[in-house]
Length: 213
Image (cartoon, rainbow, N blue to C red; front, side, top):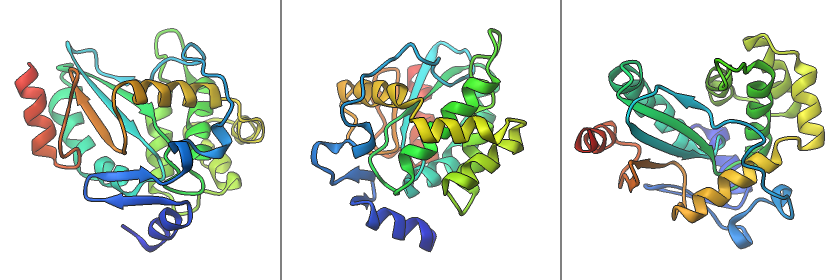
C-alpha cells in the first residue's frame, strides 16, 4: 500500500484488513449514493471473455486491496483463463468509501465505458481506463477527466459525468447486487456462485476456477 492510498483509506472512514476494504460508514453506502434509484439497465456489465464459468469481481477502485488484486491476480486470470475464454469475467462496482474519490473513480470509469462502447463491444475501454486510474497517483476530478485522453475519450465527457453523478444509478445497482450476494468487503471474487476466501491470492482464485470447470 502506498502512503497516499493509506491516507485516503483512513480519511474516508473505511478500514483495511487482510481480507480487503470494508466500510465503517453508517449503512455502508457512501453519502453521494444515498437516495439514488438503482438502474441495472443503464449500462452493460463490464465483461471480459465468454467462457462457461462466471467470475464476478466486486471492487472499490480506491481500495488498496483491490489494487493488489489488479497487480497480482488479474494478470494471471487474463493470461490463463480470460484470453482462452474459459471464464466470463464480470466487474461490479462496490464503493465502500475506501478513498475519498472512490465514487468519482467508478463514475468516471463508467463514463468512459459509455463513450467507447458499441453493440459489438459493450464494455468499451472500461478496463483500460480503470487500469490507468488505479495506476495513477492523483484522483482529483480534473485528473480523472484528463486520464480519459489515454483511451481517446473527450475529457469533457468525464467532467460532465462527475459533475452530474450520471452513472450513480449503475453504481447503486451494483452495490445492491453485491448486498444480495453477501458482499461485505472489496475485493470480493465469486466463482460460479462461490466466494473465494482469499481473493488476493492468485492460486486460490485459479483453484476455485479449476474446481468449477
